[in-house]
Image (cartoon, rainbow, N blue to C red; front, side, top):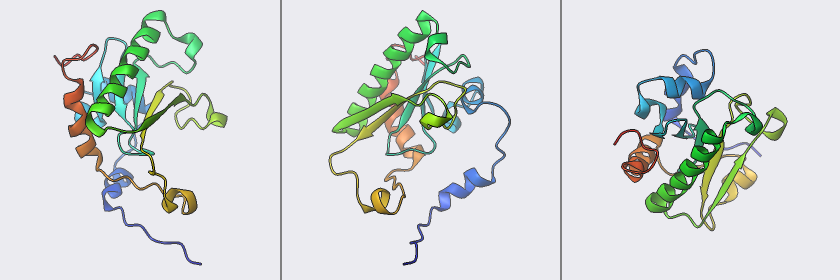
Length: 168
């Protein structure tokens, strides 16, 4: 049986662009280009960013601005703001996409599945009843129904004026 071909022409932009050195989260938060980097909101110590390789539409991460890998190394203010922005991210997803549930968690270390093991990030993954079909189950392929730019545009207004939003 041959493997199916799924065309995703929008990915060529990512494949061709220079990858840069260093941490993807540190580069995103240091840049002055939130939309390009998919940064949805910034607090004083933590920010929220869309996952460029999402499991489902709206998959985002809550990330300390400080480059730290282990939860034990977080300062109390970072822990407090991380949780506050997590709850705001979940509320934004509820408002924009109305998911039926959420997967939330940390992958700590390469063995746990962390794609970026040296900078802690909390995944917030919206889920819908019946959102698993044959593509991810059999074909090991994720099908995302909305372009990242459209997700960004749908979610950004949900953060404006909220606690932790530095764009007020």
